[in-house]
Image 1 (cartoon, rainbow, N blue to C red):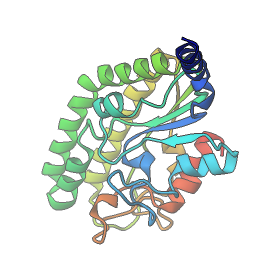
Image 2: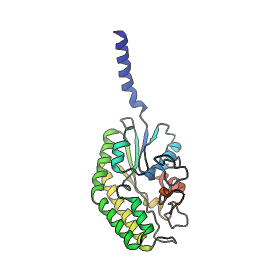
Image 3: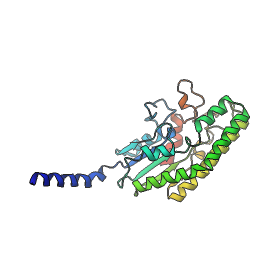
Image 4: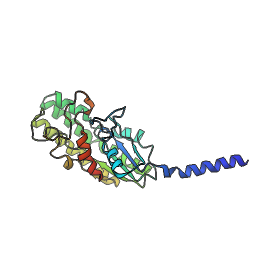
Length: 249
């Protein structure tokens, strides 16, 4: 059956050659990686060409790039729906994740609409998640990435302080302090788990220092009424001047 033989050989060759079509760079994670908070954000996942993965791919000339990051994605969502494009041909993976697990949106809502006590209490609840189940969740994510893309460099980009300690804005000093302490704990846990997995943690806090919400030159949005989901997310300057250099772009 020469026709069947040829078909089988062709199928084997195609299967063997698929790895060469693997995206060289895959960007994973949540709304911070998708670009929510920038003018170009759209669609179910809120992806934007102004987000750091797209900026890096364009600047580096990486034609084979897939951005899987999606607004609201948790560590479980990354494992469940974002790893399909990874394989042995992938050389770079970036990820920003963990904020959804910690309840970032609820924390910011409590701190904007509630008093100091309500804000601090909600931040403390988030810290309980960060110092509790989140570490194991992050470990599973990094392990899953390495299993699917064993040859890739994994860059774990952290979150900035969303608010400056000084400067005039609607958040009190107590709220700002609690939010930044929570961000510090999230960074510590993420850095620890990245190191354990052989990934490289890239700290966003120094890059955004002096440019959080309340700063004169803020790279983080305040409350954006026309696009509430973009509140307390990096704007275009935050993606371009804050995050992009962390990737070496």
